[in-house]
Image 1 (cartoon, rainbow, N blue to C red):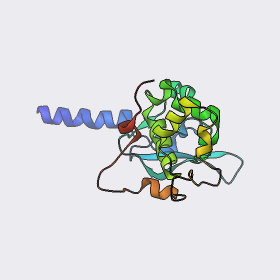
Image 2: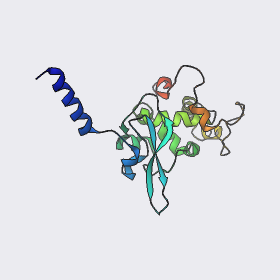
Image 3: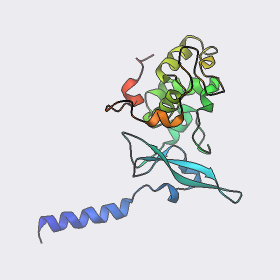
Image 4: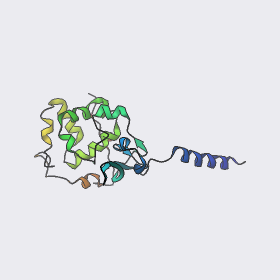
Length: 183
């Protein structure tokens, strides 16, 4: 038998054995903070009944695919696997920002950091700046974000969530590229 036929047979076997990550097939408890094989983020939504369903969002990640977030990162970053939707609201919570900016999360959980980097960017704030401010004064840093969605007075106004994912230039950026120096 030709080595190419054997290789092809094993490739097809392993693809079927390992499968792809399809958001709609994930258990509800594994949905939030997962990334489908397509590179799109999975989204937990309320269903017509009393339960929840996992769907594929239109938010595309640039560097990760087929990823289900680890329990260690969920704990370190202080996120909730039962989070419905994708929102920057948690950035307004001091304890959440402390967890997100902690070295255990910020340096070891690129999926969660990338998500909140883009959410903060949509609000006109760089996550690295928010974390630096958090290290200086944990109470004042959250003031940069206002519940109305507008950024602090140093920016020109609110930025839509869609704008955070639209390329500003031909280069693509990720929070992993912009990690702050070690604490």
